[in-house]
Length: 454
Ligand code: CA
Image (cartoon, rainbow, N blue to C red; front, side, top):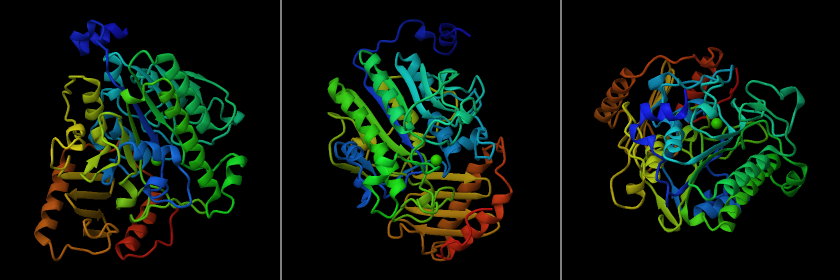
């Protein structure tokens, strides 16, 4: 369908060119499986992230920001739609790599495009691999990246035309030189150069610091005396890449008019030799403790967001959808339930309550609920635990018996939330069921799990 016709059906007023004058640029830097404490601004002594710290030190750090899932595909499905991804069945990752978001779910990139933004996605997609689910069909004028959930950082001829690992420029598979993290940043810099006269939106979705753990030898050499040299080098490369983008915005004198958001799609994983550091959070990627879904997050927007600020309100990556649309000046109203809220009035102090009183998580039998500072973790077949994060961020002290009324209320709310969800499009693999059960059992007993893989 022609874009104009699609516009006229969806948004009759959009038949005329959008008035884009003065609209801020928007850059969403999404990184992959990052450790909560693996950045300078989040306390790392070992890893060097001066450029990422430039974002944090010139803006606002979220202390209670959550992905809507503790794994990538579902987390990104919630991010792009502003809706709990279980509402449309994108609940799991599978070994087939891609579930794919149904095309009757609207992505905010599609709306930004109709608002007159030039839009680009660089990096990992993980939101579908059919023609209709490709970034170019999902609101992005430009795409350079791969459609799956993970791939190596150097060119590999055998993956050239691979459905999930092949690098594509728009819809064509391409070869590339160098280290992929650097390549994605170079593409973003070129896009800024070409589109600096328009408002633009860049979804810069680095696969760093997801496995496989691969870095340039020259970067590893800088960290050879640290405990995790390869991961430190991958993080250093990521930081260098982000620095290039920040420098370009400064050189073009457009950084003042650009909202930059930096966050991880889920918590860090504990991989042997390159284990992420989620201190002070419990557990890791894939589990419904804080280490699975509380994520590193900072926003910078010069002249709007004050420097050196921090925001402690309960926030969700589901909020990015309405926040970005608000920043763009869009008056788009979805005909579906949007679960996220516009964060701008909260972070600017115009609203004093939390963006969310309640948040929910579920990957099949593994679930969690937040009610303000209280957290319920529910592992079907294993049991429940309830914690007060205000004085127990590490989730160690079970409050089910001392707070039995609240425990019942949180269970009830969880069931009510689940009532409106649909069955997952694809199931996770059954071989993980026993492993996860044993991990929850150990963490419920405040022990370190012995087994992490099927
Ligand atoms: Ca991830």
